[in-house]
Figure 1: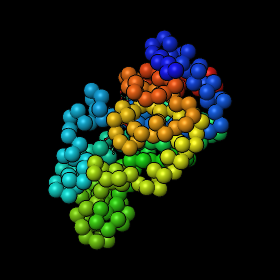
Figure 2 (figure 1 turned 180 degrees about the horizontal axis):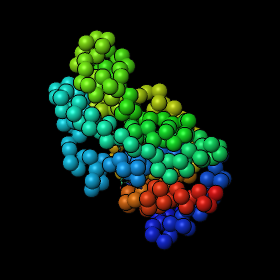
Figure 3 (figure 1 turned 45 degrees about the vertical axis):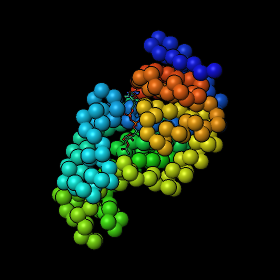
Figure 4 (figure 1 turned 30 degrees about the vertical axis):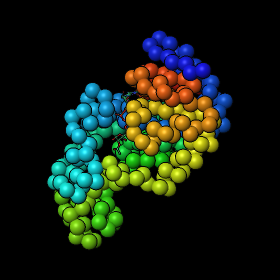
Length: 247
Ligand code: OAD
């Protein structure tokens, strides 16, 4: 039976989560943009989210890459520049500590800023890629971030097609990363999902494939149609801080 906790009940819920985590032999954490907002990176679909201001098809799709490279380039340049000075918050470090203590197997993330790795997690599956890694869309050759910043063409094939290694609308997820992440999720006995609207396919299917216990932490009431064992409505950083205190 699903249990939903908010406000003052969060302490109770975190107690349940802590005991699930202590019992679990293999735990996986799945994160979305809500994991990074407390580091001042906007998410996509809440009030101040990117896709409330800009249509993703205009700037973050294969159509935009092929048909309006200048706008595509401008958008990603702005996104990358906004990451200057951005660092992980306490919640990221708590997740990294859980891995160091052997309490979680891996982190599967939709986020492209790389904050889990910066915080110290080693087993991170970046399902939507990494925004600071650049390649040529034409020949696939890796390129320097500064060349993308300078608006240069590919030094290998000459195409005007440098792009971040992120999954654009209209593209599929990196197959090996996806396969490994799915393998971990199908075989874990606890999946903790943090800060995602669960609107984006195929990642929104992953909680349905977990065979063990599932817990959802989000600051707005989402995920009601999913068979989560626990839903905690609260901020990622706060819930993780309380969790750490109980471990
Ligand atoms: P969304 O913006 O769709 O959802 C983020 C969720 O996190 C929302 O429900 C927020 O309310 C919640 N949230 C925000 N801050 C939070 C906090 N501090 N604590 C807890 N929850 C918080 O982002 P995603 O679900 O990650 O794809 O979006 C999935 C994909 O859509 C992204 O990876 C991106 C986007 O198009 C690509 O770039 C390929």
